[in-house]
Image 1 (cartoon, rainbow, N blue to C red):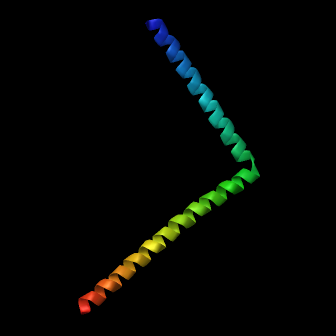
Image 2 (image 1 turned 90 degrees about the horizontal axis):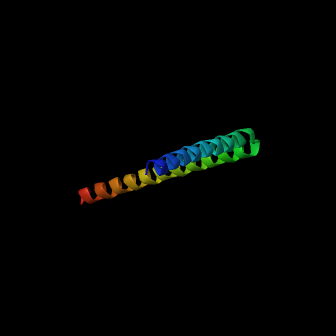
Image 3 (image 1 turned 180 degrees about the vertical axis):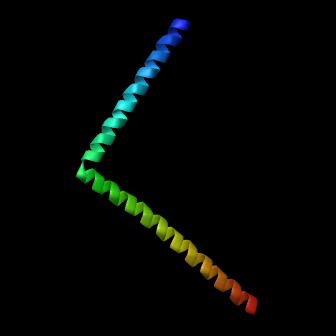
Length: 75
């Protein structure tokens, strides 16, 4: 059983090394490509805009809810 575990451990270590190499290669390609950098910037901006719009919508909803509550308290 020990031999199988050793082989499995070696294979897992080999896979980890290969995965890290692939990750570094992708990272290098992304950092060297102007087009990919621009796309990443656009994606980040889109996420920020989406979050900002969500916050604005939530604030508008809270403001509207406050107004409705104030009106109901006047009655």
